[in-house]
Length: 358
Image 1 (cartoon, helix red, strand yellow):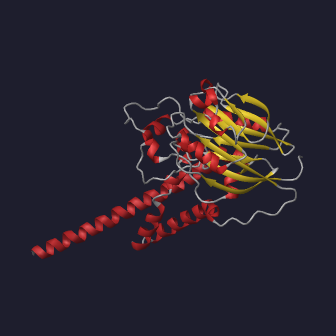
Image 2: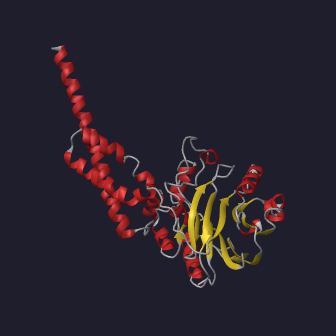
Image 3: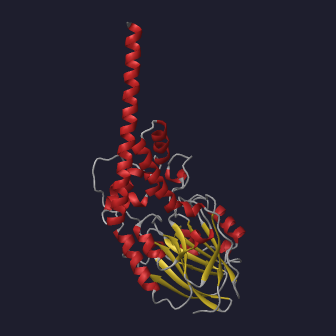
């Protein structure tokens, strides 16, 4: 009798576990249906949906496990739903992992190398940053969140490589921007951001052609806390204070400005925006994302775990640093740089300048 009781209890436990796992998988898969519908209909129309869109990769982390469990448990209806979700995800994200075809040969092409890096004003490893920049030897470097020493003195250690340097005062925002160029800078202009000139526009003389370079640092999508008595940590701060209005306003202002830009242009910097947001599509309709053309994969540049006090095994999850290009350029290669004391990774892009100015 005791053996039968143990067997019955074991059977009941297995049945309960199966039902719990099946129910959990069902709730998750149905929640994904709701997410797809809301994303299509509302896009970033409400703050909590915009927050989910910003971190969309996290939404799909459980999907492979749910698919495997539904197959093992032979839950047919959930198998079908999990497979459909997986197909949608592969269609959406799959192309970025495919090998890139070699760029088409063009006439009169000239190579232009660009680096964008949110260097972080409190960075204590500036010597590594400068050594890496010297090794890369890009034509143009745009830095955001520069320390006071770069705002006051620029970068004299790189003056032989970059004789043309234009920095903003760190009072422009918490930190300012800095442009380094191996080619003559013809003009410089501070552009208004969310109440402060947080962006730079310079023009350079590149082999007899005028190119406009926008050094961009958009507002963080952070506002006043919506909830009180939450744990005081990095994740909870973002979740409770997420507000993209100021950033999106800056993006729309920038896109309007670019409609009248007379020169071939590059827009590079820290956008504080992942490529999973709805407004990314607005930008991509006007310019080309050089990383998506010149490289593949996730390409995450933020957050660097060791700086943000996150678990060290976590890679940068989101790509928030970009080089955008006008139609006058062709992206040949793009890659991320190493971790150098900032919560961002640098971005390196090689482009070809095509034909004559249109």
